[in-house]
Length: 153
Length: 162
Image 1: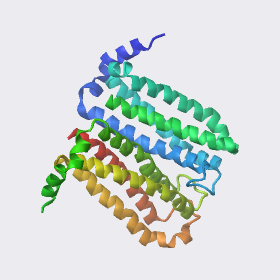
Image 2: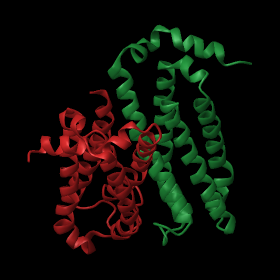
Image 3: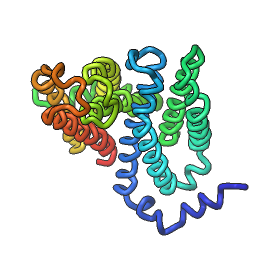
Image 4: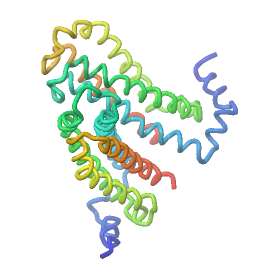
């Protein structure tokens, strides 16, 4: 099944006309995307660096992760919603853009990793937890880098 | 020499020209500047939310701040370093940009806010270290900080639109 029809629909639907045609419509959603990036990135960094012994050294990573979960989930939802609108504004450009495709792959991998390997690594500390923390930091950083590349390439 | 003249002088330096005209260096610095937002503003927000009693309620305020703020400083160094280079690439353009001016103003206030906080209400942190929510003045600082840093991100993004 191809996603092309979905992107073609997004490129023409009147519902997304504001995103396509207004400079500030796009800008405001971009700002939301960045604000959510600060919150999401902060939560990921503090939990993973804590596992590596940087920052929250004296707190159990599992507890920190639980406490920061509302920030993580809240900002993740905000990122997906604002991101969907941004894609809607440039649907055809994104569909054919290698950096966009790579970002979506990496994002899916990062989310999957978070709910599987990372989750058990945080709750059950061992040497593998540190590997999982580095893996998580690498994946999320790669998502960010690929995202930035959409604008440049 | 006026600020504008200083900007014009900077504008014509070799370093400024090199950054401005490079197809790789400018986007690279910009990428650092965008992603380090998480390290700076993300960690600031975590300390602010602790002061408000919204997260990490059972951890001492001084422990949260003491362990997290060093990360914030690393983020600040990355942001300031990359930010200065980005400014250097287009000093005159930045000088006339209203969003840039507003961002600088917000940055000054955002810098003064913790300075005052650490010299006043935070001095007696021992008295409210274990309380879920900090005293009113500390909560005010936290709200102000969240608002200011959000404003800085928004104004920073707006620079490209003027």
